[in-house]
Length: 296
Figure 1: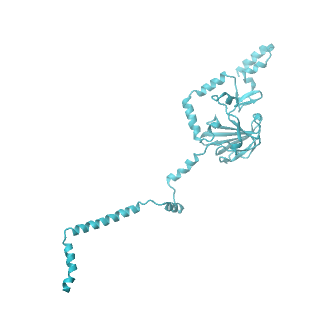
Figure 2: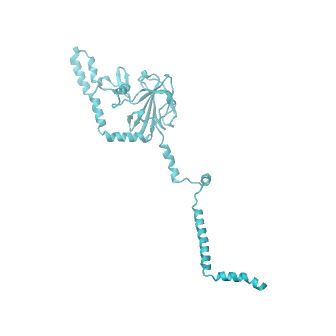
Figure 3: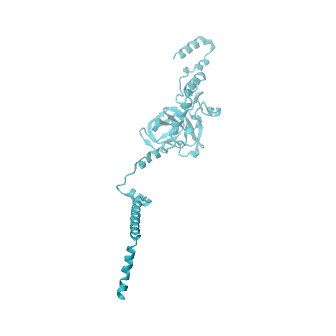
């Protein structure tokens, strides 16, 4: 009896082994386990690192930035926008505008400067404070000081050069705290506002200009705009009005001449109207003078 009981389990396993489905089922089970192991291992290699792993990698001594990270710095530098050249913009007021032939009549009149009984076109803007007190004048853009000079009519003058052939011009300064060759960043002080003979009607102020490729542009149009907007605007203007320069020159030849601010003391003999002051009794002498002037 005991011998029969001992042999019962072996007989059961023997009967299981003899089943036709046993070994196929065994093989499928083993294959499923192996496939699961392979899939798990591949997922482990492709696992995305978390924020902690990235930070640890950056903190390591052998960390090397990727090319995309190297390109990020120039992109940030291009985001610098043109600012008013004053430390406190809320207290600043534009008292003389940029002369624009296409502007409204009121703005064109506000862009004329009277000096020695003659009107001159403003090639920039005059900025003053509400209380007529002096204030700090700062760099509108980061750049290099190319020139510092003292002009008898315009006061102290500072010129900065920037990338993309952009130049900023500051005059009517009382004090200057920079020198030629200095590197300045946007917002760095270049001097303090003062008075000048040419802009005496504006009291204490700073005269500010922006020039692109040597051409004066309206600073008010580009305040709080990126430097690249200068390129875009001038390119569009040239494409839309290819004859604008010729038209402007023709207008200046036909209208009564209005001198630029940079040449306020132009010889009056160049003005054809200067002969009006000669008496009628000396008509022959006036004719000779006019002939000499036209031939100059």
